[in-house]
Amino acid sequence: MKVMTSTETRSPRTWQQRHSILAVLSAAYLLCYMDRMSIATAIPFMAKDFGLSPLGMGSVLSAFFVGYAAMQFPGGILSDRFGPRRVMVAAIGGWSLFTLLTGMARGLTALLAIRVLFGLSEGSFPSAASKTIALWFPQGEVGRANGFQLASVQIGAAVAPLCVSWIILHWGWRAVFYSLLFPGLGLVVLVWIFIKGTPDASGTRVQAGKPETVSVSEVLKMRTVRWCAITIFFWSIAAWGLLNWVPTYLLQARGFTLSKMGLLGSLPYLAGALGYFLGGFFTDCYFSSRRQAPIVAGLLLGSATTYLAAVARSGEGAVVALAFSFLFVFIAAGGIFSMPLVTVPRPAVGAAFGFINTASQVAAFFSPLAVGYVLGITHGDFATVLYGFVGFFAVAAVAALNIPAASAVRQATP
Image: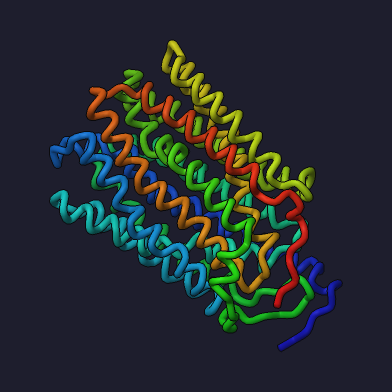
């Protein structure tokens, strides 16, 4: 093993490799969320083929999160022990396969099973990607790097309505899922090529597959981890409700055409991409010793702008309000998801991130079901749903007040 000096770790070659890795991770996240969010645009058309009720639609949207939530914590532990490279290759290859199979489903039962397996295959990716950021980037840049890669999440969600609506118009909803296989296979190759060794903060070159120990009990005892998990749980109930139902909301409640929805419906997701980046940027540059401040502010402002979307008189006004809502709540999310990367000992980063994201995905599982149920009993009253989201963002803000303020300095690695 070669030991590198701190000057060598800041060499142009190392800088270039770091940012090449960041580009690959961002591309993988973009495709990840295109694969995942395509169903949110396609679900009204799938519902016609399968004869689904609003609750049935919610079940299909939620099925993914059964597997996804179940794999978050194990995926983080696997990344800590065996390195993120192998985990990401398996995850991307798996979800690409099950995206293809989604387009081949011939009934509701098969579709539900495929979406659960899709979630299982994708569930280990976020922890592995964040583990890679924590290993490659200096502490003062971790929030920005993580925010940049997470911004690709919302770019993927923004691109999905545009691409999916166009494909559906020309070839039908099944073609949407067939078309996403080959980009996934290409990313498997890129991850394998670019993500190899990882220099730690001291300049020591560590092989990606070197085993690392992690104590699960110690991770769960960390106050930052616990309160981040609680905050992101309430955040996710509202945020994932918006992410999954905005296309249907614009089509059914606001009377948008498919092409208009594809164009305007992407704006909130783009605002969310900016929010993710700003969340990491603000915590790195301006709130390094009180990282909970932008989280609380983002949640409160997101709650207020979601209310404005509910009472907007026009569909266009609702889109503008939702864009601001996405901007603010994803600033909060960017701060939350950066927390374990800068406050948790490096060998435990994957497990800590996985635990926090497990809380997020458990909430994300229940959210589409709850929205479908409420829409069913209120005969499609989306305003009631939005009022509920206002409350959940506010509760998340209260929970975020308990996140420790002095969280800039990473604990010493045991």
